[in-house]
Image 1 (cartoon, rainbow, N blue to C red):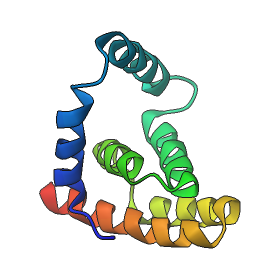
Image 2 (cartoon, rainbow, N blue to C red):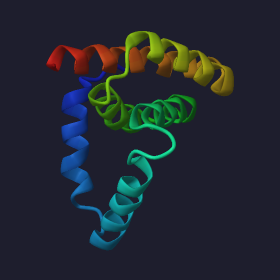
Image 3 (cartoon, rainbow, N blue to C red):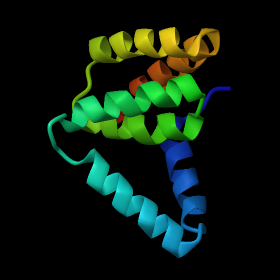
Length: 112
């Protein structure tokens, strides 16, 4: 399945706004607290999140975290290295989702 990941992210945002307010705000607080600069920089944290998204086969997570990773300055070389680790951990299906992550990367890069 091919996505226009920037459009897919916008689509998910529309429906995420319909989630229960308390749960949504709680998750947003968790996300903000976790993904801020710390011992690990934001780019590294986004690469970890993308690796998990690939290994768990989550299109929406790829859409969100690729946007953030691109904004954090992830390079194609860093992405490729991380995809290799995700494939190691997630097996053959992660190869397919790794390819989708490359598609998302190219789409977000084209928006810059």
